[in-house]
Length: 561
Image (cartoon, rainbow, N blue to C red; front, top):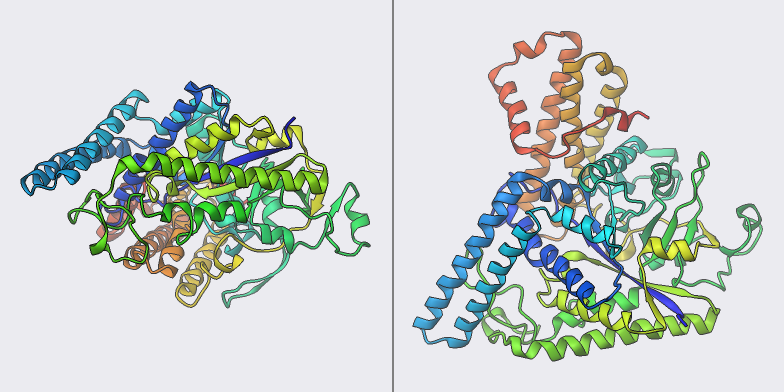
């Protein structure tokens, strides 16, 4: 008899970097993620299938990630990247042999085999990573989630129309590239805001009667999403098998509160079904996530930060000790890895089982443990991570008391019978907006708010429905608005990572947006204005078309309906 379920959710995302630099910031981020995370994950799925494991993995593929993985420039660039890595490994091998460093030479040989194997795998899937994931979904092995178009931080957007446009544009890309419309969504950064009066943390304005994030995604056909535990624990009501009207008269005791089950989210709106919120289990996730005490911090694993050579260097050293400097790291020994992965995977599985047993004893109900991670943790940041996932899935699949599931398969069998009014928050530091709204980045929000307000005004007042050229210019501006709204730009600045690159990228999209909206306003006054553009204006329009090649099907109604 099963006493509970385990749901593993990997959030796959990459900011828009295609045609915007290569190394150290730019396309290499995308190539590294594809080589070290997405292809290895596909291999893990294949291996589990071969071993008759019904693993039911859940993978989020954000629309901006899909747009890039599906683009021809990524495919050709990625193949060149893999060959560059193979050649680098071979060069390193000869260099290490000359120096008599035979252990490092052996590691270089393994890197050669690793990247050559990835190149062959990429060819086998016809250079189409999104399609390969869809094929695994069609086999019933995984569920694929969507997200907002460019991973915008939805609670801080100024206009509800902007939130709707991000969700609609994201679903449009998912449908076009994947061939279906996902029913589950990873809300960027796990960031949620309920409906009602809202005061921006950035000095700007107070908004009356804002539509909640839950209502917006429900209106677009989304049936479930994911939240942090504190957003449930701080919720206003948490009641079982009673109506919402009744709950208003009851005290907020929350005695039956548990994070081991999804809950229907209270929304006010036009009758859309209430979406379900799955709760990320913090204790289970900390076993992996914590940089100091989590499994990836163990000394035997491959050190991420130390590389051989300057550009696209390979890694040959182990963590050794987190307290040591990079110069003190010792050589990596792959032979020590299997036993350590077994130790950690079994410990993780025991923790999951204990959580489910505790929940069953307390409630007598079939519960669920939801573990959510950034996909890049497995393979990119933690090189051995995919092998860990494989062992976790195989172990739990063999346990008769634990059922592996996706969110959708769980909801099909266990629809929520509790209603919750979620609090505002995120999965970031402090559980609030501080990583994306602080003194380092508030200036970006003030610029973004002006862009939102201007675009709303133009799409409302200008006659783009009957003016083809005007519509095309506004569509290009809409693309730039989506791209400048990405949560990645304030995040990396707040974290002190690639600050110059983030500012450059944000301001470039702002500049293109302003140029295109200026042209749109002139074009509305003079239908022949495009023929009168000066050289600078023509260059700006062409620059946007050359660099920003995603979201080719912008629909201005996304902001107006």
